[in-house]
Image (cartoon, rainbow, N blue to C red; front, side):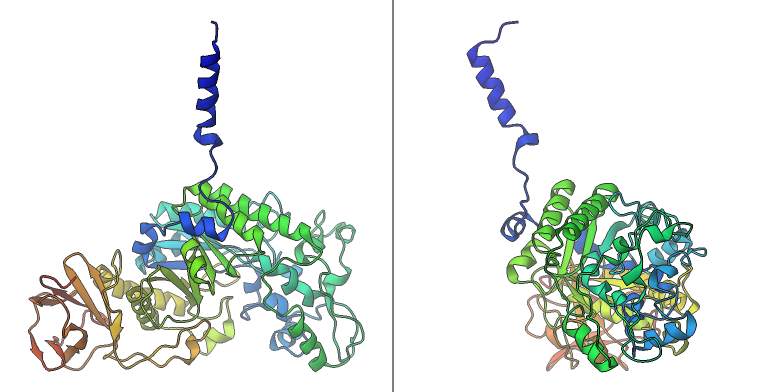
Length: 527
């Protein structure tokens, strides 16, 4: 066959127009991500996710950030570690990894409970600041297929969650490991072993000969000496101040003079999304991790999944809120937000705490549902962590929280899932303070605190508690539309109502099908 010049030009033009050679839709810049991204409808419909924030730091069952705080003399975690396991120069964090056996982890049974409690998406932690990958990582030898449970934690969760019809997400906290771990290179400033460096300072790959970690380099776990406390500090107070001013800062920028850490983080993140194809990625960062690397990772993920996915970050600018979804950690929004968002919280500590269990410190099922109602009314989703013990199980009080959530959702889920906000998020006396990590100071909700959601043809009013006798809804005064029918979800017949100065008053029945009521309000023009 003979090709003419015209044939060659046509072939060249066709090749140039090939989608495979076209520029990717998402480029690694905030402007490009913001211009091309739209939050997927599945996320806006889902409303509630459950999070497995689980790893070797749960083995001692003593709460959050055990790996960092066990190396800080004067800290309660250090004191607990000293009494329970020994001095951190002798028994360092990495010794918890072989003790993390996950021998009572039953992901099928747990997922059934999470689905009953209302979860529409599920998130597995892929790594924490302790720098252990919970998946079959190609770029990090310290992963759970080689050490600890010797199982692919993320891969197992992904398979089980999807088999139950849930969207699947992963959380990556590893960008902070390089400074978070520097306490492991420190020493006691006071006492009989003052000045003796902790385990990370002296461990080498060669030292693993004949050990459980033979062939692994502990410096790859502890990240190396990026910011080591100098010799000669001789008081606990001075050591604490040094750490607070240096490695204790929440640093989002790449580590100086360590480009290898950034490259390795990006390789691991891209491997994670390529291998498990999650629907959602949670970054434990303000903005995105590690400067340009976070933008590169997000563009890669969006392009790979066609943009029908979610990435979250915290404390975002208006431009950034168009590029990724804002996450509000353990905090509140005081307004109805135009962009979909997420709050993440936990019924206890992020890592399992036996003392918290023993003193009855968990959020109740009612507390969780009230948070869910408030968040959904403001165009958000709630991601809830149920802490697992080191062995993978959950305790009886956590079972009770999930069961109480399930009971409420079975009656009232219609007013949560696939809803959209009304013209106002709600009304009532309780004022929430905008911000992160401030939920501990919030006042309890009252029956007069009402939130609203909508579906085509229906407005839902969700009081935070049962009022005595009747409920007045002030936001219906002057609202467009006409109220013609009001029913209680789970309650059967329509309820009597009337208008009076200041609101529409609905008479509630004595029977209470759930621990907070939901009213379905119908009539032309309401939504």
